[in-house]
Length: 222
Image (cartoon, rainbow, N blue to C red):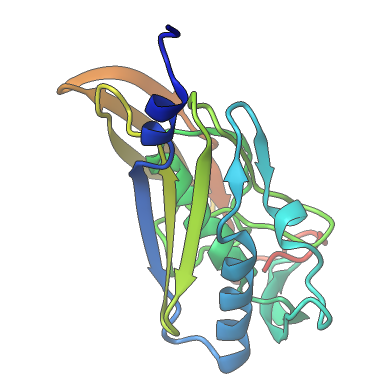
């Protein structure tokens, strides 16, 4: 008999919520709320195989009217302007934090030029249509699934997979300092098992410009 049968495997698949993270968008405009809900719906149910890399942009697709997105505020060249898909970055940022607490490997992530108020500094992940992407790798031995939902004021992202054996506890540390007028955040992920530290991951540092600073031209970030 094999060590692992199909019955044993089926019992393990998607038997645990590895992490859950929520952010509020209660103060958003109607169009921005629509964009958040639309992007959440597009990533909801996505299954990532062991070793597979998830791409936010490939999964959500183009931010167009035809794809269900509306005009709302977004960052372009460090300024807040109207653009189709404004608010999508809140979905990628909420997903990023959920992925961090699920102990998955980050493949590509960039912070916003300016700070955002819906998530701790250092835990945002900006994206732009056809440009900056957020990617992560399923570094577990089993498939994982993204569960994302909204209720009109809050978005919640769960990472569903196979329970770590032994169980793991994840802690994120974000230390803030100044570099001239900019705010710099250095983030570290600590993974514990049975109360013992088993790994330490130095995550991407984040540099935020002050609102009054003129930033160089770049692709839009929702």
